[in-house]
Image (cartoon, rainbow, N blue to C red; front, side, top):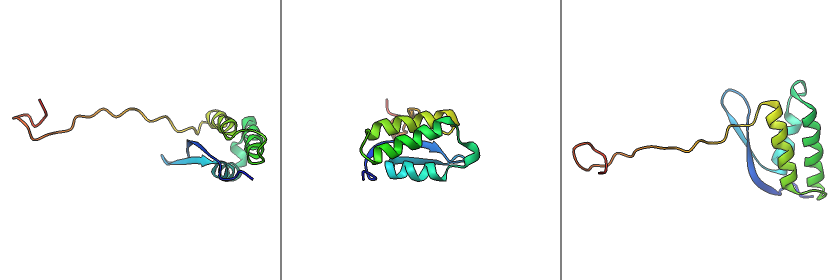
Length: 100
């Protein structure tokens, strides 16, 4: 019913340094059904149940997202949060090439 309900995306690692963004209940459901049975933990079942309950409108999408995050942490697939990027932009000023 609420398959397209979106929430703040959850980034998960899908191997070899690639990430997958789960931004809706449909994305989450698809990811969970494709997840290898040999790597599933107890939290996997909770994430599936939460996703199904959210799709049925029984709980909020954010609650299902929280269950997905818990599963991703226990499975070791939660993508690390982005670190702030600190850089110096070269500018054509002065002799050093940087803004004064």
